[in-house]
Image (cartoon, rainbow, N blue to C red; front, side, top):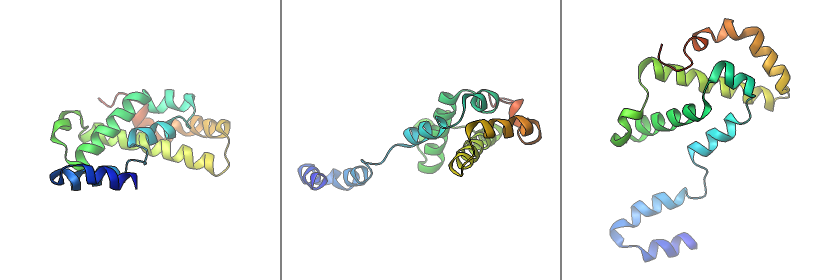
Length: 133
C-alpha cells in the first residue's frame, strides 16, 4: 500500500523508474550482504587469504555494478583482468568458508583446514593480496 501511494504521488514520467527501485527497497544491498558474509569468516582467514575486507567489498560492489548494470560512471573502479580473477577467487573462499560453517564445521576446524592447505589451494592469492601481481 505504501509503495502504491508513493507511486501515485510521483510524476507519471518517473513512475516506472520509481516502481523498479521501490520493488527492491526492502532487500539488503549487495554491500550489506557481503559485509554479513565476510563477518562470518574468521579474522585469521581474512588476514592470510582475503586481505582488506572493506576494499574487497568495495571492489566486488563496483565491479558487479559495472559489469551487470554497465554503469559507466564506475568504469574506472571496476576491476579487470587478473585483479578481477583474484577478486573472484577471494569471494569463492568466503563462500567455501560460510558453507563449511553452515554444514557444521567450527571456525577453528575451518581455520586449520585453510592453514593445512593454503599453499596448495590459495598460493596464487597469498602472493597477490592486493590484486596487483
